[in-house]
Length: 397
Image 1 (spheres, rainbow, N blue to C red):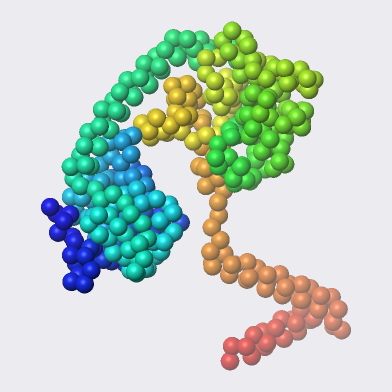
Image 2 (cartoon, one colour; image 1 turned 90 degrees about the vertical axis):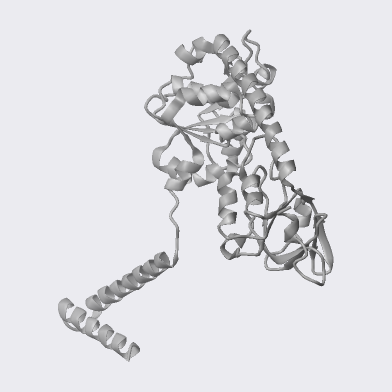
């Protein structure tokens, strides 16, 4: 009933009316979001933190290009927004989002139609407290079921791979000196190329052992980095990369069979196998670096956290969880390292560079004139400095 009271704000047209504020990652609407505005977001499974950030500006409505709750996790964000009397419309779609431009006036009907001016910009689903609660309850049970299955598989993995996790049984001797060195493992995730670029200063400073996983080894070579180790199925790796001089490690089944062995033999490249129950080459690369005594392991292209486990992401497996737990504090995400090397260049930095340029120029002038004047070096410097000082006085009069 609280949501229905939001309608009929004007006598002319039915529905809630307000100014659109693009609060997606591509927009800057959060800084301009005010009471009574309509926030546009693209946030599936909106969290309590994101909901609280919106509520601080007291919007009249929130339009979500995605779903407020997908059913993957029981999230409280939608409850908070509805309890505050905010109208929620979801599943509008990215196509409609392009028409919901920042600063435009919009009108939302009771049926979830969104009008910008006289044009229908999109249609979504208006959420009710009953629908939100039903989705939350289903998500709670679904999460419990998934976690029971996940940790059952985790126990099973420990049964089969306990010797590998505890004593490193089956991990090959790579012949590459890793002990007490920093290691960079690059996995072929969506952002791995950009992450490697952001790590250029780290690579230049520490010269880490570089491990390319699957097709990410090709990316490393394209960016000018020769991997020391390649871990993965060679069927998806370029011939030039496999012949680059890196030592190649093939993931193998527990019985020793390794996919892609024929390709390695055809190319005349030597390789060693790494038998394990996991089919993730990234997990094997991390275990390899850990076993051989890496001081620090930086992982690019394969982020992992508990939210991935809750959401049942493809890479969130028992093996991934146990592997990362095995490395503990020595494992660092590439974005964290890149952030340490990032220096923001604001206006203050620009002024400093400009000042440095002026000083260098003045030093050059003083040195040249001091050496080429008719008097002694000291007299020439004094005369030149006085001339420069008089010039500056003329500028600031």
